[in-house]
Image (cartoon, rainbow, N blue to C red):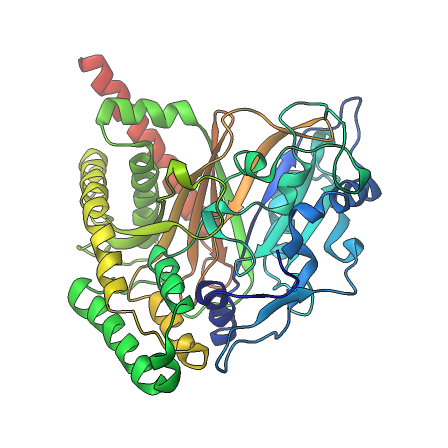
Length: 475
């Protein structure tokens, strides 16, 4: 990677969303929870720093910072080498207060993900968190979405993971132990959820914006906005109003739900559809309970979920860049019957799979002459507006087999999905080693009742399991 590397329009979009609203925090990441080391204890912070620093040349951009901290003007910012880079500033140590149970853990990571990254330094942080009950420890990482490359990206924490309890050493960069290839390690962690597929395609087009757009920026801007307005007004019925879509702050609250993957697979096998339909239906049931508890009438047309879909093909493995699309799926929160709710979710998802690609393509067709950076922020906000969707729900597979760091097995992954302005909730689901974790990521001020959603999703999962059992018995 060259020392100076210009951001793409897609990269810059995530900076612009933060600049436009104090409540938008555009980092991604996850908390990786490990068992104690063989023989007990946790890694030393010096060991983690040394281990990672020896391998960081595999991710050169993690030593780079933004040349210009804000977007605007006629060109995008560029990455440049941080001459004062110190691993100690990016890999820190913290200890949970006693007793270090799940409540303390979730409170700590909620606070960690509430703080923006410093744009004057490389845009990532990792914390070695110890003091958890039963000798457990965690690696908690956040990386700005402008730094990573969607479904092809590899986080710094992946450089610390091994497929076996003990790393086999030979030779490596800077004389350190051998590590697996970046591409191989990418398969051990969930791919960062890329929020909107259309934005990815728009970013690629913007990167190729021609001379006409530069010579006639106002015309290009008006044409771009006209296409977006047409897309929203004529091709998409606006998402319904909801208490989930109000101005938010930057302080977050995180809750988790743990379930065995085979339980969802049983539902899929009995009721049809796919595992992702089970996830969407469980979320629908939880959102219905939340709205009813707030005294809201669930909208008849349903809440609209933005569901990222990885469209990377086998021949694309190992390539960087965003190759995602998004489905806008109506969640039938007004439907009281769980079986009918599941049928509606499955049908809506299937319908959108066919229409979603055409929708993205039609948007792309009209966006051949995008505005230059000085006008791009308005376009970015349009593509993340509450008019398009109410909530993000992403389901990403991690490794089906257990992985390790410093010889300790990875027990769980708590994922997060960024919240754009006026979106109080995001749901990220990760399957790993036979388990599945729902990460509920919410604005603290407007979602004090996150426990209602959590209980509602658990109830919905139980209802679906009962329906699957009944269906299997009837057969």
